Length: 429
Ligand SMILES: *Cc1c(COP(=O)(O)O)cnc(C)c1O
Image 1 (spheres, protein in one colour):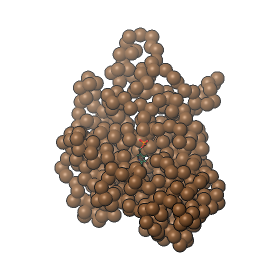
Image 2: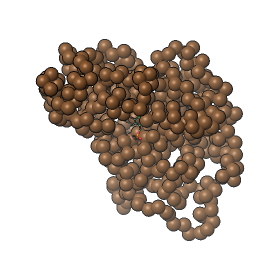
Image 3: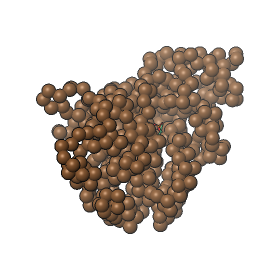
Image 4: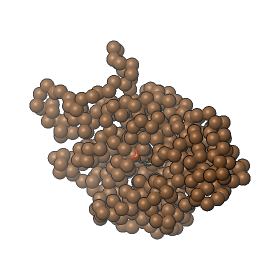
């Protein structure tokens, strides 16, 4: 296909019906697929031929949507998972096992932090958390002999800080390991991490990609960029024979797509966190308007961030698109058309005042969710991050006063009026 713009890819990439086939992506609601001979089926199980045999591994609806996401990110292949958590788990576990070590920035989504901090430890994988503003020397000192990857979030949730992809890619590559980037908040409409040196990109498609808050899902995109065989000693899972496929070596058999093929035929086979084809269909509907929705989320968010910044009762606002934000230069570099619709802010006044403010909102709702068409907010220290100690909160870049605000697709004037009114009301409660 000729090189097209992102908006065209959002609508059309991944599925091109032939003569007489449905214009809309069909939901292939089938667990199994039929073959004519025993030999045809045997070849599929040996990975000698490609084809569908069981939806736990692959399904045509899922594959079309995965191909769209791969096209948007500029990767060689992608896989849909049942959630963003499953995507980040698989993305790391595909190349990291008991006895290995990985490096992650501390400014990451609370669920991912728990996965790395608690569950990976139990699985025998050690994670060193680093401050993403630390110097190159400090970052390099975190590497060990058994380090297998570096992980970061393009825009951190909930702090909305911008990750310096190019710098982290350079350092990771210098130490012979790939950089994995969770690109959930900007989406490929705003930033394509592979173009800046990331090797693998993950998504919680639950957020903007779906955009309507109707289904949980995730995706992993393989940039096809990392030279696994140049570091074969570090990545035996990709560069030595897999006994469960008669001694196949992924890096030899699948070249640039070795990583994503292994994630599918090994991790999905054994763990089974597949996205349902029905959900993949909904995800595709979301992707078809992603470019239009992101534009509106960003335009409204900037208006509201400016309103908050000028409000006398607002202590601070973190939104990278504000000229005064400490991440503004990185935002201009990595996502010049705007970051996303999420921001963080704090009110002057005590915890009671904050709670009264949140309770007085009428149009903006208190929700765990972010990044869909409804404007919503939450207080991470008392909601999403309440399992973390104050020390861990600070390490994760979460100020105890921080309110995370996700701007939806309502008219921004109405959102501003609601916030304005709720701040006034909070004084009287
Ligand atoms: C929500 C989120 C996740 C987890 O995704 P789920 O779909 O909720 O499992 C991971 N990373 C980021 C940045 C997120 O915002």
